[in-house]
Image 1 (cartoon, rainbow, N blue to C red):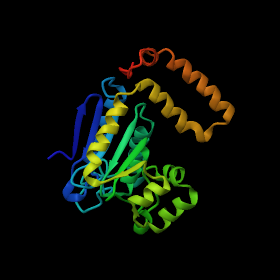
Image 2 (tube, rainbow, N blue to C red):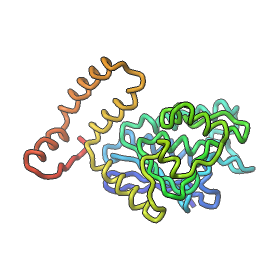
Image 3 (tube, rainbow, N blue to C red):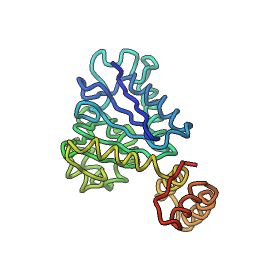
Image 4 (tube, one colour):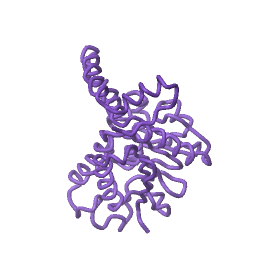
Length: 263
């Protein structure tokens, strides 16, 4: 049975962690699959949005640390110092974060440790009422990883991030919504439908323009206002060259919904 399932439909690439007997604990095969998929999505014009989710009622319980869980090392490159393993994991999550196409995580059940890093690296997160989030690292004597030292305080604020990280307590879905970790909480039975609908909307959008908007917002914390408005001017100049911009204006004048192609 494949550890990772990949489905493509109408521009949406759905990646499902598929180890339900392990609550989708991430093994070397998962990391290798994600590495490959991110490379494909980044360069394939037919892939216009990415959805991450998990099978069997859980997103992921984090890295598979069980005996024999990763006989070839955490990332499948052979056993090596953890510094090098974590650099490989970090680079994969960094590529997810900077993917030039919109990304969405659909979280049911547990989302723990490095899996939380994957979810927070996505542009949007929709969760079920049964979702439970945890920065478990301190409870295992570990420092933060998965990019959460950067993403978590930016979503929930520094003091709340320290509370979540120091104690390693479970964050229920309602608190995750109130604190800004997720965009929306829906009934568990509705999660697949809502996530797919969001994913299809992202995939049907003006891909180049969404890439520009994503880069603008991600860079906002490190720019002055003057730099931001200059970047807006340059980004708008690029957007004006796209076929999707012409379609957006044409559809407005014709009083219909736009039909973007991602070009």
